[in-house]
Every structure is written in C-alpha cells, then in structure tokens.
Image 1 (cartoon, rainbow, N blue to C red):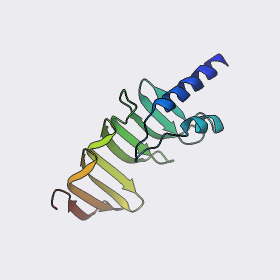
Image 2: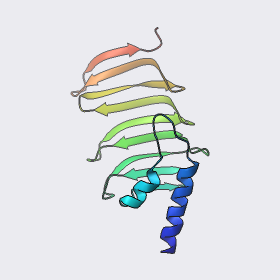
Image 3: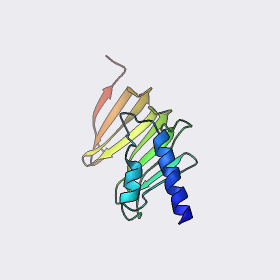
Amino acid sequence: MKKTIVYFTCVFALISCAESNDTNDYKGVAEKVIEEEVLIDTVSFQYNEWYPGKKQLKKEGSFDANYLEHGKWVYYSEEGIELSMITYTHGLRQGFSIVRHENGYYRGEYDQDEMVGLWTFYNEKGEKIDEKNYDLK
C-alpha cells in the first residue's frame, strides 16, 4: 500500500510539473492512471504508455529536464505495429520522422517543429505517390 501511495504521489508530481504543448497534452494523465489500470510509467525521464490490459505498448519516449519530449518517440498500434517515429529536441519536432496510416505512410524531416526539405508519400503497397519540397515556397 505504501508503494502505491508513493507511486501515485510521484505520478501526480510529475504531471503537475509537465508543460503542455500543442502536440501532446498531458493534463489528466493522473486521473487516467487512477480510473483505469496503471497504463503509464515514467522513470528517469523515460515515458511508456500501454493500451488497456498492459499487453501492448502504445508509445514510448523520453523527456528532458523540463518534461518536454526529447529524443526518439515511437507510437504503436494495438497489434504492435510501429505507426510513427518522431524525433524531438526540447519539445520541438527535429530531424527525421515517419508516419504510417491506413492508406500508406509518409516521411520527411523537421527543423524547429517546421516541415523542411523533401517529404515523400507512399500508398499502402509502398509505392511512391507524391513528393513535396517544403524548402520551395
């Protein structure tokens, strides 16, 4: 019981210190932990979130000292398929990203949360269907 109280106290403290941004709003995470099974672990700035039942990882990544996304974040489907991989630098998307969806996937790079360079779009068969250069305006 003592460990559970300490765990929830740490989760509440972590959530209350976290800053919100447009891409991920962590408000209400503490309530989610209490209402459902414990689905979120945050240890040493590492974040892991599971689908209900804690059988499949939903997303994983890490935070910087200010609890902003930092480094590689990976999102998974309920079947365990990697849906996206996005890299962050202190809360801003930075570097290579790939996002899969039901009709295919797309990939490209970010610089300071802005799409830059050539982004390529593929259909569900993996065939290139479009390209867009975000450096050309």
